[in-house]
Image 1: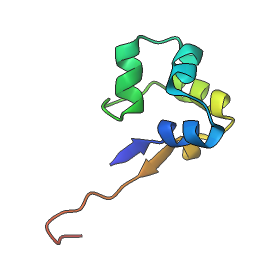
Image 2 (image 1 turned 135 degrees about the vertical axis):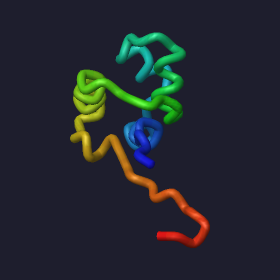
Image 3 (image 1 turned 60 degrees about the vertical axis):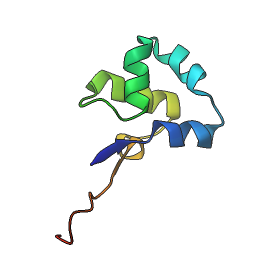
Amino acid sequence: MIRLRVLDLLQEKKKTKYWLYMQLGMRYQNFSNMINNKTKSIRYDRIEVLCQIFDCSPNDLFEIRREESDGEV
């Protein structure tokens, strides 16, 4: 599973979710779903804005978590 690391980056930058919400100017429900990894997609322009806000690359925004299955690899 690919996970958006926004909450981790906020903590590293010592910023709040509200601060990011104001920077992005999106609807709160969409914002909440995005930062809590409850969305199925994210637009390229949103990725670009997040990279500018956090001064990072897209690689820094995402991490891949391997799903644990019943002993299968």
